[in-house]
Amino acid sequence: MRYFKIEEDRSAGYTGSVDGMHKWRLPGILGCPTCKATWSDNSKAYPSVDLTPIASLADFEEARPEPIEEYERLCELVRPLLPPGAVLTPGATFGPLVGKAHGRFGQFVTPVPWWPLVQREAFEKLQAEGLPGLQGCPTQLRFRQRASPVLLELELLPVGRAHPDCLPSNGRPPCPRCGRLGLSLPKHLVLDAASLPNHRDAFRLEDFSTVVVCTERFVDTCLRLGLDGVAFHPLPTK
Image (cartoon, rainbow, N blue to C red; front, side, top):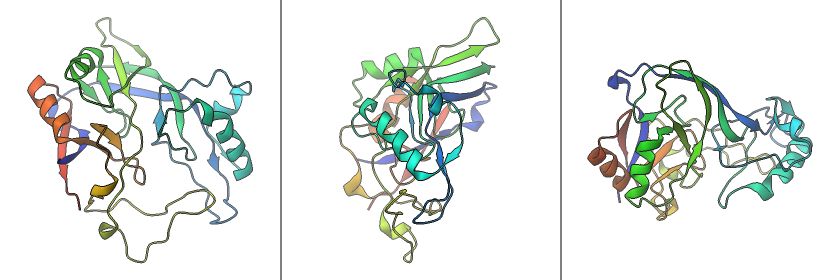
């Protein structure tokens, strides 16, 4: 199986713009006691997760850094509500994408590279093809124009990793307390074949979760159906 990185197709000429954030989020970490880092990463998004059963919902409405003990407490409140395979990191987001949108959109839309949206009709076509592991979640976007598309957000679980050969040989392991990797995305990314799933045709990497990956089967299906708005770039595996 071949794998590809999904990115915005800037040559498509669409004018669509989305300005939004997910409804809830975990705080960042303020000065991890082990690695001393203050950090947050909003690239892990779980739009299917509804946090309304949590009594202290206001704790998840503002982006902010917190001491790690408070971050860990909030993680435990969220954990029972997560889908299988979800991974929590500081700044992880939950619930629908809320905001404003306008312009002309392709079948796929990437307001940021790691939050891919898809028009409902296109998603239904993909579902009809039987591609495994696809979940489209409703958004709460307000459009300026009357003839507006219905956009769903693809929920992409973090699986798969970069191969060690494309990482610095002197790189440090993730922080054992907060999980921070502290590495930049490799210029020439190589996927670790043994870590890639066989039950999902689209996912984000666990260690570099801004990278959205799909299978050759996903690419072929999108091209055959004429679904536009994104480009596919091959990724080597080892």
